[in-house]
Amino acid sequence: MKYVLMFVETEQFAQELAAKTAAEREQAYQRVYAWFDEHAGKISGGRKLQAPHTATTVRLDGPAPVTTDGPFMEGKEVVSGFTEVDVTDLDEALQMVRTWPGCPVVEIRPVES
Image 1 (spheres, one colour):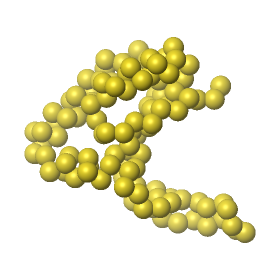
Image 2 (cartoon, rainbow, N blue to C red):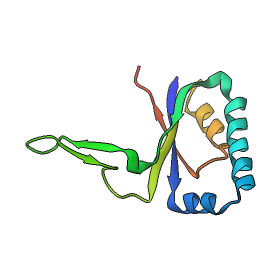
Image 3 (cartoon, rainbow, N blue to C red):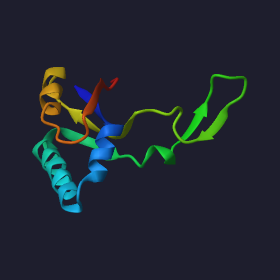
């Protein structure tokens, strides 16, 4: 079964990452790369997203579409990336996510077939 893992950064996580030295940040990135290598056989896609201020939002809930720059609302948590995994079931996805070394929140959502 396919799931998308959405990696969600919090303000606190972003601040703590920014406060690290370059060497400490590199160590954190290496743990993330190692996680991806460890689970490479189950990962079928995904990407790191650019910062929320690069987003364009189109609201379709009014009489005419409204396009704005940036995220649809200010948030303390933002999706910073995603990956698609092909696993047996939600339990296996949960087992993978419990070892995720990056941002502190991961949303797991099944992909419709």
